Length: 336
Ligand code: NAD
Ligand code: ZN
Ligand code: ZN
Image (cartoon, rainbow, N blue to C red; front, side):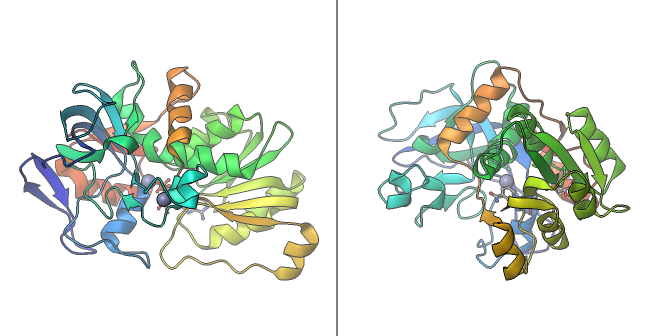
């Protein structure tokens, strides 16, 4: 099988021929049908973050495919089942975080496409307990973006704790943002979508955004305040300055949810305003297995639309360039 491999940070990925890996105890071998390109994969390939992966590695944490072989001890999956292999590849199941339904905070977790090889390949390994079943009838090319972009924004909106009377700002309408707009609408909120390209703003409107804000020409904070301020702002733009802008667009009692992870990202929070306004700033990391099941169930029920373009794995380096240039409709999905 072919695998797209990061051999060195910041260098083009190399397409390699590899043998199928052997599933260990508790693992399955998955024949990959579709695998999304998340901006996180680009951060990984560039070594952008303080905790770095170790080249050589295969990125990809939106891998969807069919179980082909079972490792020892796997009893709840069968050969032929379609599964999704998310960022949370494995967690210990015993720590306080795992036991309280926050396995995404487990200190011992292994991350797909980062700490262990991911889905930009013809086949991959998954721990059976962390591979999500994809419901019948859901196209694997649509399941792929839901596996990270979907579950991450679904969870971010849960922690933002919004309802039908809230104005929610979605900052960045890329792979994550195009799903965030839809989950905020499903929650009944009024949605203000912010981006910097005409295509993304048009897409946001098409997906149900009530207000669109072009951050090139307008100050998102001013526009949000002219509507009374946002109850929550979800930071999905790979631009450090966008967080402070989203913060400034909040109403009193508002919640800024940090999701995007630009290199060396940081935000300065004015203590006085934060205290007097009762503002919360919350970090949100992907979503749990239960969240992903809910995301798939919503999609199977026809409640969400996944906007994607397919590419062969051989186009991996051009695809990364396209995402960085902002010319991708929403998500690129590789079909190895
Ligand atoms: P993407 O490139 O598909 O989307 C980013 C969007 O932000 C684009 O539409 C771009 O036009 C827009 N943008 C850029 N500058 C902007 C600005 N100043 N204001 C408004 N919009 C702007 O990326 P993605 O795959 O959606 O990922 C977004 C970020 O989220 C990445 O940093 C990624 O690593 C991170 N991420 C975090 C988690 C998590 O669990 N916290 C999970 C997945 C991805
Ligand atoms: Zn991701
Ligand atoms: Zn744990």
